[in-house]
Image 1: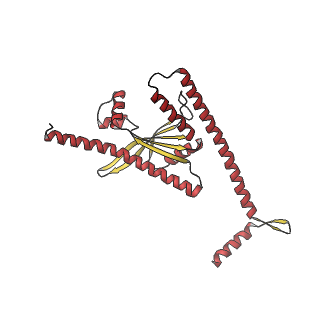
Image 2: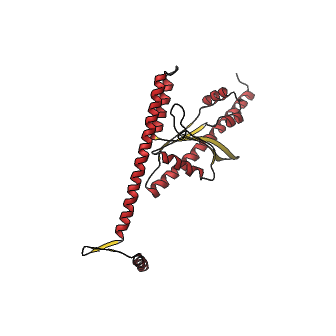
Image 3: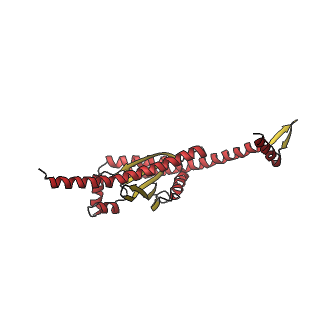
Amino acid sequence: MMTQYQMEQLKDLKNKITRFMMVYKFALDEMETKIEILKEEFHLLHDYNPIEHTKSRIKSPESIMKKLFRKGCDISLPSIKHNIKDIAGLRITCSFISDIYRIYDMLSRQHDLKILEVKDYIKSPKPNGYQSLHLLIEVPIYMSDGQELVCIEVQIRTIAMDFWASLEHKIFYKYNQEIPAHLLQELKAAADSASALDHQMERLNREISAIKSAQSENAAEELRRIIISKEQFSIPAALLELMSSEGQNES
């Protein structure tokens, strides 16, 4: 049976571990709020949303300990914070490759966030074909006793990249022995196909954007023209400005 002193020690240890894990949860909450704001801004102002969906997770204490043992690090909370950088993870899934770098630029311009590390597995895919943009981002969290700087891992990828990575993970998880060479080759071929699809969709998106832009310019130009007796006239810009100012004065 535990003594009162041992109970107090266990309670204190539990509170320290709970607080330690809480700051990572709060850091994820902060990042998800930022992403939601960006999504709403793009939806309202640009009629387009580069973010399809997000998914977050926090490593379990058991998973953290296993990784700490594999790395051969000291067992302490400061050691965990220093050596395990992916305790909190956020995955952002986009439609197009260009969206990935657009989101990265938006996050890097937020003055309260600090980009600690960038690993671009899109420009330099892993040997197995894996592609994604990995960021380590330091997020400030304000607790009752002061500020905490919390590191979270952010992965940004397209739908095709996410689809391949999810299935690859499931295959390796189910196959608890060494993967046969022919399966590895097929997985790599599937990754190449996903990458080719991403680049094809990127080209289509650029062409559609160019057509939409041209249509907008044509529509604006048509509004500046009038047709009288089958003859077309351009409305002078000065006349448009004059009538616009008169209309404002009348109102």
